[in-house]
Image (cartoon, rainbow, N blue to C red):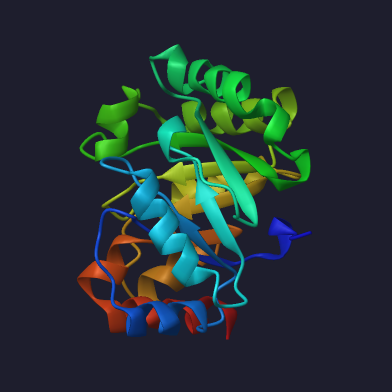
Length: 228
């Protein structure tokens, strides 16, 4: 079984965006620790299945981040289940999760499930709008959510999500300082080796997503920047 505590770098692919077969091969063979498939809007079962079938040709772990029940597809190595801790809508904290378990619970293997405690901090991103996230948080609020994730919910992952913008490195540093067992993921605004190193200095795992579609060559460099 895969040990996420040993990961440092993850590429995140959006099923609703285009990537060439050559680019996909380069990503999968780059040395990244995993390829995460997920998105905030227009995620369909067909697109998820198509992308998964291509990634599965390579040895890199293939992970589905479940954002909609309708696009849950068997065959992934791991299933990341986000619970948005700072959502104002309880559906995004536990409601949709109950519906998924009601429909798929008997088919799911506990060893394949990783629950992520999300804290969304960019008020202008699609994920914040979709989940009705309270992004007006100070550092003490964020650290409190991190402690909720680790000490109350015993979550394996706490995810600082800035989606589309580079977050504050000091916030990442202070958040990491309150976590002992829970793995800290960071995502948002990592576009090149420099920004990758900046955030990897404090986060356990960095997630590179938008850069894949905006500047592919620079996105590739982020792997060796944090692992090489």
